Image (cartoon, rainbow over all chains, first blue to last red; front, side):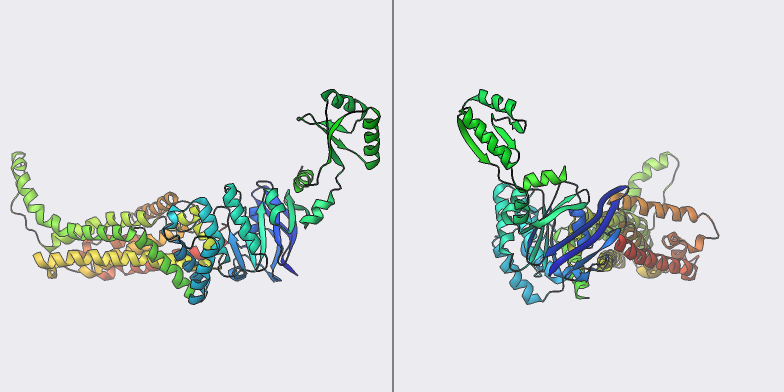
Amino acid sequence: MNMLTIKNLKKSFGSKEVLCGLNLSIPKNSIFGFVGKNGAGKTTTMKIILGLIKADSGTLYVMDKEVVFGQPNINRYIGYLPDVPEFYPYMTAKEYLKFCGEISGMDKKDVSARSNELLELVGLANEHSRIKGFSRGMKQRLGIAQALLNRPKLLICDEPTSALDPIGRKEILDILVTLKKQTTVLFSTHILSDVERICTDVAFLNNGKIAIQGTVTELQNKRDSNEFIIETERKEDLNNLIGAFNNLNLTDKNSLIFNGTEHEFFSFINYIADKKISVQKIERIEPTLESLFIEVTT
Amino acid sequence: MKTLFAFTKKEFFEVRRTGKLLIIMLLFLIFGIMNPATAKIMPVIMDMLAESMTESGVVIKDIEVNAMTSWAQFFKNISTILIIFILLFSDVFTKEYKTGTLQLVLTKGLARHKVVIAKTLSILSFWTIGYIFSFSVTYGYNEYFWDNSIMNNLFSSVVLWWLFGVCVISLIIFFSSFLQNNIAVLLSTGGVIILMYLLNVISKLKPYIPVKLININPLLASTEEIDAYTKAIIVTIIFSIVCIASSIPILNKRQF
């Protein structure tokens, strides 16, 4: 079953078409990486799901219920963490969660218990000062707590790690991983290592459309890597090789990248053996999401 | 209803926590005291000026100070107080747009019309409470020093001025529903008030324009009675309701 289905979503701001027929489906209990360049339309898509902005056309279903702009009832199934979450600075973390519970119509006792549990989870349980003095990382963690307060079926995180230092980033990713059993996570980012680290599924957004979508393993295997990196003992051998084969490229680190078929590769190895070229390293380049991303978006 | 109450509660909490409540109460208190105080020291000032005035040919005789002097100050100064009040509250919406705090609240399923209702309720409450507070302080001092009973139509005049305040607040809410920053909200509101004054020049329209409500001298002097204000009262009430009500569909369409 899909948690979220988007069909032919279109949105323009003035003459700029941001989304042009986006189709996307997010399987239940997945951690879904939504990847795209800055300005690709990730935030716009998310805001349309949340009913903050109106789509020009297209349909959206959250848990098989259609999302209609201006009717916020679907939002009780969704938790949202904006890229830079902003809270009322005069409240404490606990007061803010209490307020969130009240405006989403939760039971008073439940709010109190759930707040304590979540503040514990995000490491803010002993923080009694007002939000005004919170660091970016603390705000991000409070952002996760407020997003999870009403036990959402779908958690939408807009670049939750982009602005954080490596430790803050790790903390947020670790929290997201623990949520896998409870909820589906839609997670936009342009940091591909984060996707490889925690996501089960991924979609690349380019020019307002989904360029490619699948599970992370599927996509990683999609590219049969025929690229090898070669380093020789002596520098002049590199030039020698480049002269003999046209599917070689010199990198800036005095090594060569070979890109060709298996057959070509064997003749390349033969050539090295025949010419008795001393090799320091031959290594197959592992397919990465990054190379795939660059391929589909450029 | 529960969620509306929760958001309204937050509005009151915000005013208290951010210190705005203290500022408003001090403002209204000082204003309340200032009116009788000015009336009280006026003869002293006049005495001091009398000598130099006599030299220039103006003779000042004994000035009679009574409750009327103090209430005249009240109605003269209240416009300044309304302006300060409006300045303090002009960003209740726009601050939330700018920082994105409202965005997060809306994603929790809070209906947008409740935001308008809650904010309207809270601003009107503070205006009403502060106004009554100021009025009570001035009334108390006046009663102690002089005699309030010499005043004609005092309560009607006070209510008319309050209603004009409500009208200005409804303009703030209306403009906040679609404008992005509070300077624009203030300028637009000011623009509408200026337009009202301009329309007030046309004698046919005069009885209908909300600014009629703050022209209370004829009422205090009993040259006009409250009946003369009925049309302006009705127009102001309808105008305020329309402003607040129309900000709901506008906010509903707003993209965050």
